[in-house]
Length: 369
Length: 259
Image (cartoon, rainbow over all chains, first blue to last red; front, side, top):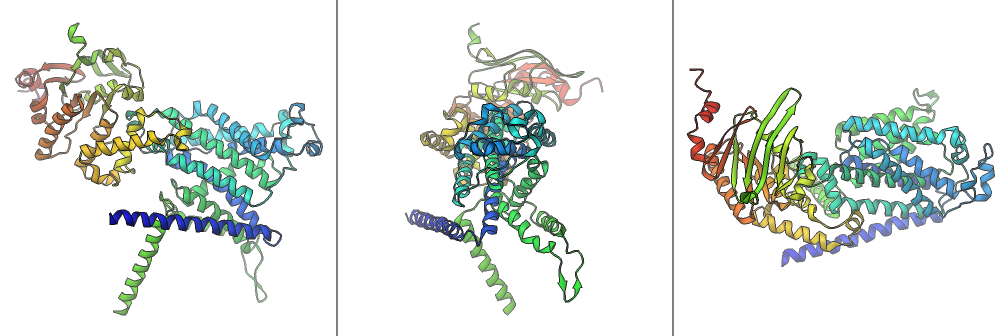
């Protein structure tokens, strides 16, 4: 009985703490939104982090939870971004966007609400992923990575191809994409996307993904169809990559095919690795740390004078050196990423601080002796 | 024909060829309902290959495999598991980083009626609850319930073997294939395992087909034994017949031509 009560008490405490956290996040966002001209720089960092968090979690779903080393994320983001952009650019603006080759009459007058366009973008990405999955998901580890990387590049090349000029505007890119109306829009969108993926990971299908990751032969012997399970994970992941691509298009307001080069995939892989392969919390934290870290380190790009001496190395590009060194430190000393495979929980956090306190107390005790 | 109905598993003239090597050469055997049958033979005789042919990891080069009278040759491992054949592995293959509970729960999904959306959005929580209840029940029956939150790889070796069998039972099999269940066990553990195998056979109404090297275990509980050497069946019969069969003794002890 008393143990039950204790659990209930803990549960109630956790619910209260969670509500407080949500209130705090909403409060901060509300404050930023109210003063958006003062904090526009910070808001843009946060919005970008939210977009990256969605795609990082989607990548983690495939790489961390299903154990498939896939590097196609940028390609699926490109599909989502272009579909969202094509259907949300206001019809009145379109002649000025497609001023070179004109616009394909089929899509010229279709304008969709942002959410519908984004879901459509996700579906297109998912559909392409389903097709690509048939040949590609029979490969393993590095081979799968190379194949998905190749397909992502093919998607990007198709988008830039002059044959599709009237749809994608080729190498000129798309502009005049409506941006986020407020910081709450990306917040809610990313919360829904990540929430869905967390529910999926904790469902019976998420357990099947993990079984495939742990041991394919044993998973098959437990009646799990390997191909179907991998395909499912790959398609769902690509759907959310597509949605996050749509969000990225809205965030950037103008996109072109160069936005979705392989470097974008590596950025996201970096977030996943730093956060911890197999941890949703880690991916979200990683998205914010990496995005914010890049910006904060801009300090190193400015020339620095101590007195009248120009300190060497402080010049544009130096921050990437520092950033890389920091990354190496993280990878060397936290080889499993910041979170490993752990997830956020209040019990975990409270336990951490309790242990921390104990350790400190012990140290103090030791020093006193 | 009448005893055909009793046949749970039947292998007919199965050949498994890898390049120029015949790992299994013309193997015919059957397992009847409720029987415990052993497959023995020296290392490299092709015993595990035979198991892999049954469970669909390999498709036999020629010959037929049937389960409950219908052919399962060429079916994929997950389809065969759904039909009611479960197995354990020579080198334990648990989902190492997952808990004991999750290991068994995953096997329960096999017969779940849900799809990815209903499962994600928790629309049919009754199905999820049923799986969890059945898992808890099975773990209690197996005396593993206290360990349910342990990570599988942290269990001692003997318990990992036990968990692997429990996980196989969770798929509700009619035929259980055990690949060296007593490997690495001491005589006392082997004796416990012997009793355990008979117990689960009766409790879950199984037929059991096993590969084993511990002769005391094999001789104690097998009703029939097949002996394989270099992919060929060299003997079959009751434990007594096998123990006195000169060919078997030759295969195991090196044979008389050396003398």
